[in-house]
Length: 238
Image (cartoon, rainbow, N blue to C red):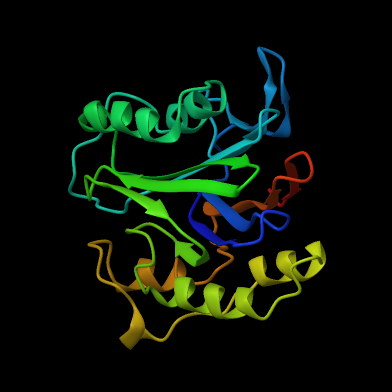
């Protein structure tokens, strides 16, 4: 998952609205979003290499999503980052306790950004943790954006997605998917320097990515609130 934009509302009836693109190599085997046979309470796509997922919901009113933290010089972890999402969705551990446990094992994973949340009668409780930042952030009402750096790092695609999201009709899935299909390239002077070179930074700068071997594999709209069951709609591209 390489771009997530979401809003947490003060109104419990609205709760959380999230739009996301998953970017991955085209040849990495994946299952589309569905209830898992071995964990029926989880509704999510599935990575068939690591066994976990990048984004999902549970019947108990939980959601979780993860993105990679781009740092090509960092050592690789021994565990799949997809475990971070499926582990939360399959548990009933409170958010703070779960993230404290993840923080204790943070060095076992490659760089990651994790968002977790739970719907309740008072609205959606949500939090963010990155093993490249090392602290739990409780998330209040507002619009947030995340790519492959820390939460709300103002990369061009994050800024653009948040601006578009703020003017999109929240009750219209099609308008959210249109946002996620935006292929606008950032100008070179706006690009971050994450150690992958200017040409690759440029290729990875749109909200929707297309290259010969890597790109946006699916787009997802997720809704979570106190009034209705969690809802996840996915459009698979590759």
